[in-house]
Each structure stands twice: as C-alpha cells, then as structure tokens.
Length: 421
Ligand SMILES: *Cc1c(COP(=O)(O)O)cnc(C)c1O
Image 1 (tube, rainbow, N blue to C red):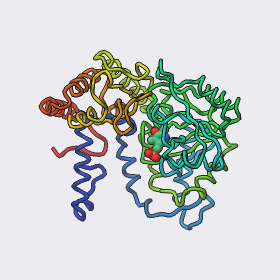
Image 2 (image 1 turned 45 degrees about the vertical axis):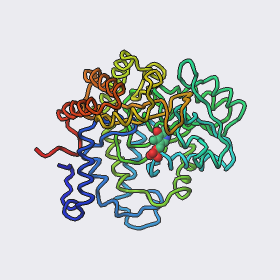
Image 3 (image 1 turned 135 degrees about the horizontal axis):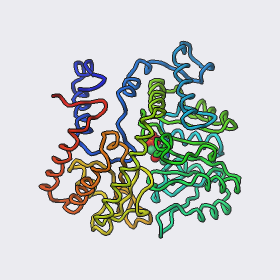
Image 4 (image 1 turned 180 degrees about the vertical axis):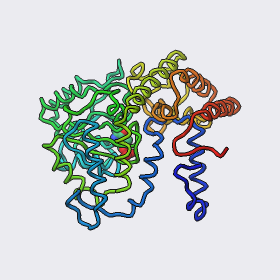
C-alpha cells in the first residue's frame, strides 16, 4: 500500500504503476546503505505529488513574471523562513533544482570563466562540481585540487593553505561526497580570509546532521552554503543556497535568471515540509542516531578486519578500502546488492584502480536509521557484509543473507509504503 495511495496511476498506466510498486518493495526489502539516500515522510511525498506541479513562478515572491502566485509566494516564503531559522543564516534561496545546479549558481554568482577555483579532488572524496575535469566547472574554470593526507586519510589543511596562498583561488569549496570525518569550517574560513577567497561549504551529505546538531555548522564561517535537501536532511529531491545578507543578491540573481527558469513549486512545498520536520524535537534525536549507527557499524566492521579510510567515522558515512580483502569494490557491491544490502563502490584516497572499478565501498546510515535500525543491529549488519564480501561468488550464501535481511526489515516500517497484509 502506497501512502499516499496511487489508484489513478494503477488504473491508467499499469506499466509504470507496476514498476513503482516493485521499487517500493525493493526499498522495503533492502538494507539501503547508499550514503546519499533516505526515505522521506508521507507528508513530503504528498507535497511532492500535489497540484503545485501545475504552476509556473519564474522570479521571486512579490516579483514574479507570471500571475496567480497567491499561494506559491507564501509557500516559498515559508520555506525560506524555515531554512533561515533551521540553519541560522541570513539568506536562503530554495529554488535550485538539485545540488549540481546549485553549485553552478555559486560559480555564476562569484566567478568569471577562467577564474581559479579550489576543491577537494574527486577521487579523494570531493564532488564533480568542485572543479573536476569532466564537469563544466573543471572545463570553464581553472581548477586546482587539494587532497587528504596519506597517513590519516583526512583533509590535508596544510596543503589547503599552501595551495590557496600559491594559486589565489577566487572560490574555495569545502565538503564532499565521501568524507567520513568532521569538516573544520573555521579552519577553511581562516584560509579563505587570509587568501581573499569566497568560501563555499557544500553540506549536501551532512545537512541533516548540521540541522540536528550532530555536526558543526558552517553558518558564520562560510560565505555561501550549498546543500541538497534529499540526503540526511530527508526532504524531496532539491537544493538550497544559503548565504550572508551581503551575498543574497548575487546568489538569487545567479539562480534566476542566471541559470534556471521557473522553480519547481511542488518541490519548494516539500522542502518547506521537510524543514519543518527537521526543526522538530525528534529530528535532533534522528541525527544523533544516524551518527551512533555509523560509529557502531564502523566499529563492528573494523573488528572484522575491514580497513576503514581514516579508521572510522564522525558522521553518517563509512569508506571501506577492500584492498586487504583481495576483492575490488564493484564485484563486492554487486554481490551485496544481490544479498539485499545496497551500497555503492567508491574510490578510496590514492586508489590504484580506476574510478569505474575502484577499491572501495561507501556506506551511509541515514536510510536505515529512518527504518528504525539501531546500534544493536550493527554487528549483524557487519557480519553479513563480511560474509558476502568473503563469498562474493557463492550464490547460496548470498541468497541466505538476502532472506535474513528481508526478515530483519519486515519488522521495521517504511514511510510511504507498507506491504499488503
Ligand atoms: C549529492 C551532492 C551534490 C549533487 O547533488 P545532485 O542533487 O545529485 O545534483 C553536490 N555536492 C555534494 C557534496 C553532493 O554530495
């Protein structure tokens, strides 16, 4: 049963309805460890599926290019006020379609083509949009990249400072997609100040932890904060840019008309709903539980001899280097998926293998925490991962683990769908 229900879809388009149903069942039965994913609430699903998708609203509240904004304006203003309150920022723009377009808007707001940008190298845990070569941001800007220390696996702040002093980037990114440790926003801010750069904090992965007080906030340190709304923050697919009042105009102009057309009003409403949920008392507990689960899982994996990048985690994310297990990331991830444990293969720092066939696995605990799994379940999860990585071509073991995983999850409700009784 979908919640909200899908009677019209089921009646009119069984091809798509069947696939949506199958996907719901897949999400119900799988231990979802993809670090960028979550389960949103039925309220967020309802807002996302509402008639707001029918509306066009180019511009900003009170300054639109289309009539009929009597309801959309207050919705967008509520989303903005909630974002400002939750993250303690002076300005918020809730219109970016997703994280990558939000980051492009940061370039448009602060840089000219050919200017220098500095970000964490992609294979070390950065994001494509922080100046990686295949991204528009690496093609149209002069990108220089910092990395992590070989001995600790942590961001090399000495290198960040040396490189910033030498290259004088106009924009410095901190944050990324595979960083298992706390980001030192204050240290980045000091380097940005010293070198005259704009500091952008990309908290796409950790926004829910920041909102829930389980990770320090970049507010007061970064000039601009970029985030998706659908990872640990547990909202719809979307993004936000937040900034000091000083940069509000530049950010807004960059998003519209600089980069986008009409905002997705149904998404804006769903972002507002998610921000309200994230401001509630349960969410701080949720954020702490995400981290507690990640710590417990990291501990249990380390006990089983897994080599964890940085040795553990401070947040929702664990990066495993499988080199000592004699198996690459991709075959391990594929076997785990067949065993009902869904994650992604990932590069590890200084990976000798290729990005499409790297040495690592990335794990995140946001979705399983939403399902209600707790620290006491983590040793069992680590044991399953250990068993399947060790027997990745033994379909008997894989099928048995998949059954056990399904049994565990059957007792933990999924927001948005329940199996037929
Ligand atoms: C996920 C992510 C993005 C991109 O978000 P999309 O919504 O996939 O475009 C940008 N930056 C970081 C750090 C991310 O983790």
